[in-house]
Image 1 (cartoon, rainbow, N blue to C red):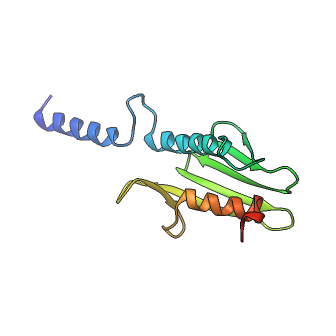
Image 2 (cartoon, rainbow, N blue to C red):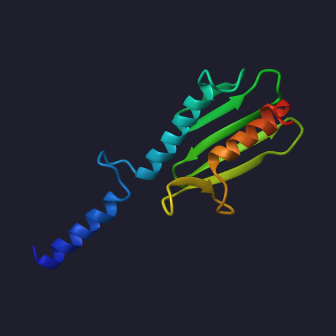
Length: 138
């Protein structure tokens, strides 16, 4: 094998290591699933919202509901396009969907896809208050 071919192979390996974990799974997919797991854990913890039901609809989707509230929030990881969506719906109103992508630079975070701003955790807090816990606004 020539030196040029070896260098091309090394460059390819470096490029793939940036996107694929050692176990062969895509890093972005792993981050998306980890975010869902973290959200479910935080929301279902004893310090979470009282009465909030956190339902797992598979590994890539969770649903938030509150008894006696005709509303829900669905958070879903879309592996095929590499984004997270948060859809909220209150009875009698249209659905609202916000999409998020993972941004490495300048700091690793999940930001809104449409306008490049916002943070998924801040938006989740606001949506929970708006849809499921309106009494939290004062």
